[in-house]
Image 1 (tube, one colour):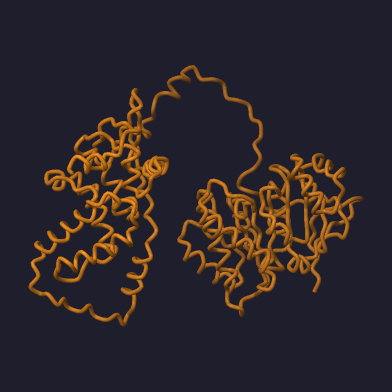
Image 2: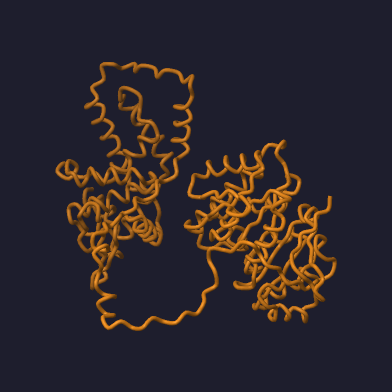
Length: 503
């Protein structure tokens, strides 16, 4: 059955229609700079096709949530876990409900992960539910970037893989991708190349105009026309629209976006007490408490995941009783601490992997005949981080140190030792360790990686780094109410100096 979607008018006021059935088989790419009318075009397409096909909109700005009022789209708030979004997407395909995935309020990295999880759930749906779905992705250059940006490599790979699956392999699963982008040059070529239908709007940059002309099969000298297109005017090409480049004007829409283009409004008359209004805090602001967001929890390690799976088994075997019921736990802990101190006495210990250190630790435990089961790898990692600090008895029993230990548990094992060394220096007001010392604790020779680690701590609200007038570094811990003394960041490796003096 052929369904013609009314998109507006073409040259000579001829109706411009889009073959929906052909679109589902060939996909669509929409390109235009900000303000060219891309979102208006997508809204027209969604409104006109809503009675005929299930729809899924990946919406970074929350503009398409207004479709729920008139067309019954279900708005899915993306502030959920990735596993939740994947399961919701599978049920969306099963029950054939049109949805808007609202990514508003998330940063770019989170948006990419959420979109990847949702698209993955739709792509992996059971074969029985492979009904046709129009999948519209606005600002597609965010989810399928042509080059790595400021987001994490992990998020970029997940998002790019999901977009590639949608455009390259989605047709057999009933998924028809409609992607819109501001910059063709910023969109991954393998994603854009899978579209057979194109709607090109106003574009100013030469590289984008040249690529748009190339996709439409136009000569380079014709690319200049994209600069002169008015808002809502596009050049169309593709089996679902026209076999030759066709200028069209997008028709009106029934719903409106929550965000609109800014309009000029007269400025209010300047109040006499303007300075008081700006610089004096209102009673509500004074009474409002300052909320410190806790740092995000680190991802679980492989060992922790395996331990969770083991605990989740209903038929889990009972833990066997120890073969050494008469073990003196205090004596055993003292032996383990002595072995840890001996292990870290090696100058090269900081540059050996945790796995190698753990094997060495197990051998030393057998040689010393330490009774009972040796600590498991997660417990060893924790002991290793604390042993690298080895605070004196007074500091170890203080409330500040106990709080520092609690804070360190939210970090991955490879950075806990560095954090605890800095916390100990702050609690005793010792000079801030140098980059060389922090690098050794981190297991690297690179001072720049040590500095990046400090920035990473600071971004999570764990500490504050500042320089005094002599360019010496001071690290403050707001939650501990303590800070280090000023220390030279370019100073020597204190760990090497201390061991050399001891020898």
